[in-house]
Length: 553
Image (cartoon, rainbow, N blue to C red; front, side):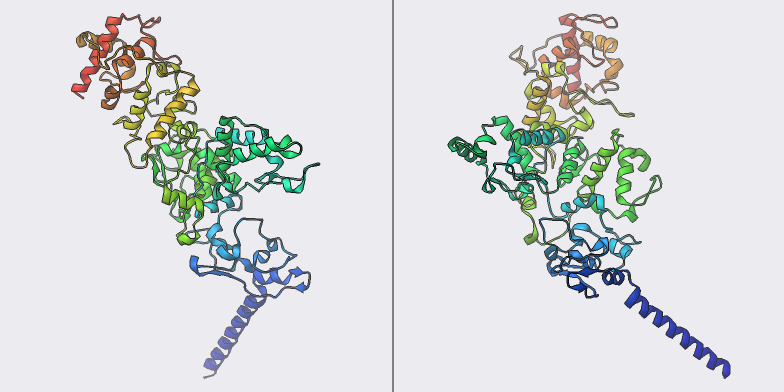
């Protein structure tokens, strides 16, 4: 009996102590309580209590402002712990959108690790602070972002034409200058890529300049050539109040990533779809071959450094990126996320992309080439070679462009190369539009400074020669690089139905005769120490032999 009484007594005491400890911990020792208890305002201590932002339309209940008190709606300036600081100036009101819609994390939690999502089984951990701008991708679809070179060109022209004298862009410019009246300050253009701008801005500005006799309209503005205006407008169209994210997307549009990957339904099919890569659950990733923390950001960074090590068997080549480029690409990937918010909350750029089909990338030839082609054909069309892969031809080679007509180039991009990694960009879903293909061709011509060749014959198929002679010549001079059956080993595949259908006899004769400087393809018209010169009849025999493959693919 006494033993039972003692058991009941001490178990009750233990339970009471446990409840008291839990009450003290809950009401006095919680980290958020300690932070608020140390906070001070101009009128004295703050009211220590849970705070939250509730947005029913977004199904968001975020208690982040319990610790980040300075970001809570209606709170005055709060001094104390560093987490009490107010939010940096942003376009959006946190009271309308909450916190997790942009930053991710676990909104209902009040403990740091729980709230930040750094706990097992929480699929959406908070974005790291250094990649906070990636949260913009939750709702926004940045439009018309150019490649790196075009972005830098537009930025330089904005400075060269003194636009920052009156306008503020991404925290620069728009400051008062001596002799510049307050009314001369123009609107902040940091988010003009989302809100849009007057397409007649130049005409209006020029009229003001021509009518002014003195002042900033006379001194800080002047005529701007059409090409410079176009570059400035491309730059302005990319401004979305997240400059580092735009820079990251510009890099993405320079490396040819869409050549293999789809984003938003546009791109290639060789690699995985990246549309929602920024929302991948880190717990579902394989970190066996990844050094460092088990976070999505670190997995992406290590994958960019060495794809085949992180994902054994990956066909993605190592691109030799610098640490700064990898950091930007990680930001671009983390921004590829989507929240299922009501359409009433969609910003204009997302509406224009998803309802009107506007492109996320600029549609000038340089950006289109960088977005779809550069990974395989090189930044300047110089061609590329990756270990274990057939070499990719140099489409910017002057000798190639001197032999290839625009029609051949357009047909090649449109139909691709069946059996090779070159997709039919004009036929596939998520490919290129006809006007975009034309701009890529124009870009190749412009950057190589090589005009379209004039046709030498009125007929596309005019060669009349002996294919048996050509077969012998092919085995002797061509099979070593192009393969015994034209399958392509160390040079492009010639036994390809799309290639043979698009190539005219003029192109084939001129290519064999001219060769390709900077490659292993010699000029068979003039000859070389290792290759004798071929007569026009012999070159035509080679073409006749190639044509036999059209009948027996």
